[in-house]
Image: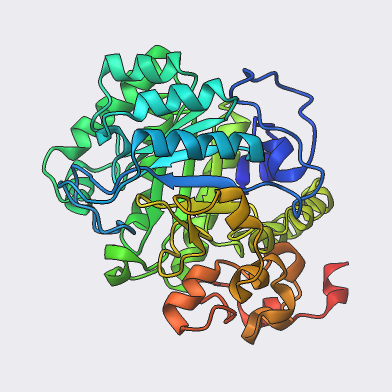
Length: 406
């Protein structure tokens, strides 16, 4: 994740200590939202994206799990999930993100959340929002979910409903946002950037401000699941989209609207931001360079600081890499699987820089970007160490002499 609001505008968030290794000095978030300060990005335990169920009441075009509204066999039982949560707590993971499918379609999701909170875990929910009524929002608040992320594809109902495959999804999702805001539950908007969705970002920012939404994450597309048939943005579209996100984030901050804005799954956003700050003679450009290089981008993401457990207990390097499994939590503890480097891919993810090839290998921003998203590189090229095809930087930007950075 590239925290645009932190880096570009200087906003502090509860995630700043974990993401950039810096103590919070200007805000005092509730304890259940605050993330611990990391000593180094390499030493961070992984955030666990856990697909609790594959069942979903929608049928989204970009669903990486290809979920439908039906029951799937083989999902972990309540007791099995609690055993996993015990291990995650002992392993001291910084956060557990309940995802799906649609996690709220799982009958025991609140029981599991309560158990996770009892074990001291930082709990996040990723949902389509359609099942959040007032009572559900209050339960999320009472259980102290650190954050609820709700997916929205457009500020226009007809576009969102088409992406979600169900008429009326937009209205139900907006009610979910409003119920969370009304009860004081921290809630954010999650959007996957595609050639279509990137064209209405200004309208989305208007909606974010109008509805009082606290956070927004803009995900670059990884072509997996049903999303494999969608088209990524071309480089010019990507640059325009990031420029819009940067412009609107700065505008929010200048008007005192402290909304957290992040981009996800394309680590070249980091050098793009840095170059823009240099061009603007931004007073914090040097500091931001240090923060981005400390974070390391993709270098310390999938397989290091991000992990995935799927609905059947299989462990993956991230949620887009379900084509490769390192073990199953029914057979071994997650903590043991995660630290086992006998698999050459897992070992490579832990120390990937020397394995990267193509443009990534010689990129002057490698310490900042870390080679991007490995899942996208492998899905598109078949090579886990190929250059990330989502990189929108030009060869001139990548291979410019180091002196130009001075």
